[in-house]
Length: 595
Image: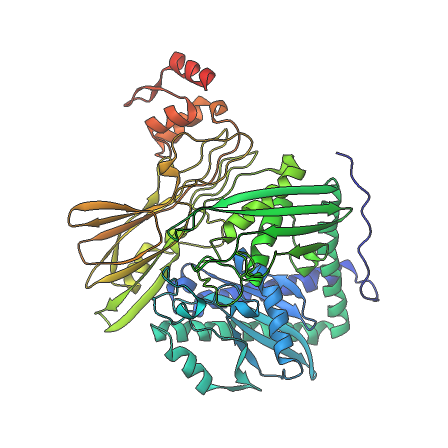
């Protein structure tokens, strides 16, 4: 492909160039600062969502505010931080002072979903605002009628959560105990929420301390010049990539399945227009609905940026400079991907974001087919709540282990197992089973990979997971959220599967000796002796499955990733002896030729 001449990045500042060693040192300090903030959250947080699953993200902004470093954390958090930070700063204007600490979760102010709560700390140096340290974390509860925030019955946002527009919880270094008490009083399992609040505050302070030390050592002028260069470096990398894409307009679309709302399936479209080293992305989505899958504009930024970065696969630095050559149009207000009040929204960071991400990625891949890869499994998760008789207190948590799905295959390798969902892109962790059982009155009977869950292909999609739980000493409420229970992860380059049911999400409810399969978002109660098993989809496959080497299919059977039936239906590989896994080569050849 002929490369278009890239226009040089516009110079937005006049400054002296920074020598490479100083640039490297400042970059290293910024990255270390962000990692230290992340580590502080992990080691000081109270809830399992923070300290086991790592469902949080951190970022650094300059005074403008531009994101000067995003952590390699949860992608669906980070894109929305850019508009959210700008709205928070604009809300307070000149009323920002040293020692302030601002809290915010409202999607109407650029937030993602309300249970992702943000702390913003302005950093002052010699009397001037120079930076912001920002932490966003998924609390285990945010008030409202349903534990853990996900209410499939909500018709409007007021039936979901406590909305927190930008508000100071510290004012010039003095904690606002009245405001904090009002917020925490509206949340279940207050001890967990208060502990996680303190972890977010501490992480912001850790970041502030490191940034001030950097300025003391190298001086503000040198550091600012280095940060400007890092922003320009990211911009150059994205512009250079876009310059390789042929000028034109490309469309991608993906289907968001009906997961219980009764409005049917929806199509989300992305139109990418490339001109020289710039691109414009337009999103088309149906009107918003009275169900919790609407996405406000700030959250949709994350889905678009994730789709772009899945295609781009650029090296660091990761900062707002990446998006200077990218303009966005989320479509008319009042649509699924550009929702307005009072649209319910709590499921939006997974649904419809993963579908939006797929649409954007597919549009870019039409422009450059050589960069095509398969979709990751979508989130299909479970929240639990009840009363812990051991401590005589309520418990509530989002079980992040229940949304761990399979990664998509690439042109070079099978998808990773238990690495998704797509919205988190490998940043979530499951945590130790024993620690979850210690934290809550539950027993986890099973946490395993699922046979036949990975999409079939020359390269197989990664396996999804099954998570089975039973309450120990009382009733337990479970709430289902997400989708991917009918339509499997999108394959690429001719990948297709005949065996569909094991590749999609579902929940098995075992009560009174009977097993019920549930595929719609719902809320129910189980007792000791009863179990629910959440089963997650696998990733999509890549390439023609009939071209997958027979020995690799046999290895997959031996490792429990593919069943004998799955080998025959998906790969045309016929096993003659189930004990030895000997292949009937003649029948296999006929099956593969006929496929």
